[in-house]
Image 1 (cartoon, helix red, strand yellow):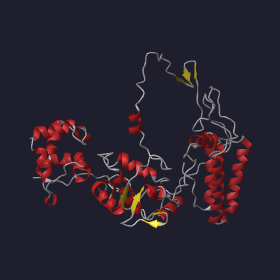
Image 2 (cartoon, one colour):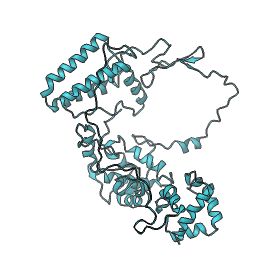
Image 3 (cartoon, helix red, strand yellow):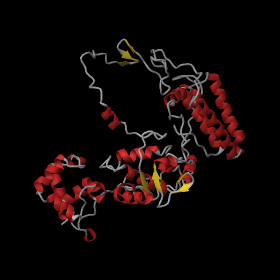
Image 4 (cartoon, helix red, strand yellow):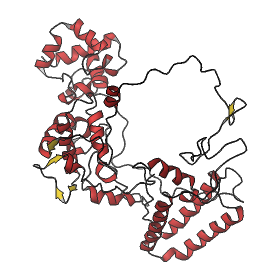
Length: 435
């Protein structure tokens, strides 16, 4: 849960508080009926009186609320355990609170609450074997915020720049700007960008929050782990530890971040010791605190205490008198600049001298270009004479067979549902453009 950030006029804040109060009481947490109505009326009156107050005072009030919420997330809740008339309980059989603050149901008369339970006999089923130590070690490769799992290694920003250009730019754009449906990795200075997380779009031209690695992520360890295990997309686990350090150094540099007060220029070399000194701008931006050995218990305590996100006891219906006041959308986004386009057609054949588009080209553009459009994916790229001469040396039948069954990092049929004849046309097109 991202911490509540507000930068809004007092009158709007009063309306939002009222809508939130009525919505939350209707959906799961309520004071007694009369006190809810009185509280709602009080909030409305207070909003009207405080209309002329400054935004600074609003921020101070929100900061106090956040501090209280954070404190409550680490202590035992004094709220009664949720339950209902179907046997639901806010605790598991071991006595611990349900992890998300909800209710768990036992199997009773062949049902779990209102739903039939699978009560078939489990005798005779096996659950596999105990994994070996080596199998566990191969699987247990995550990196924790405290440095657990982070291996030794080193890499410079300059080396990371070169790696990025060869393996990452085709998806994530120049300098991490994003593109092609893949996320941006940087949008200017991370420290300044983190401040935008407080932004509220109250007017059509207002800037919204900037959520990229540098501004939003709480821990740099997630970056190292994800790059190592998941990137580049067609060849995960192919990067050495030194290469991962180099790429992390480059990504930190384009976010204009510092480590121990030092800027990351081209010659900066990132290693394990320096990595552990990284402090992300948004490290305290999330609640509850899920890190460390008490992480799960913090989550249980936070969600069990409805004062952290509601205002009373569990309630699912008839939680207040009267009708809920609906807060309408006051600013509806209808226009986009530049305008959105859904046109994905290829140029019309013969238009403005355009060459005739073959069936193989159409298939390539639709299903093959993402990997064969350049050499960053490790596949033979369009126009590479040497690479395609090697592919076609055994003949078109062998090349087609390899495409159907998959070879090296290429999955069967390139991960598509293309038929054999369609694959053949695509191969012939790519080869014809690479002679």
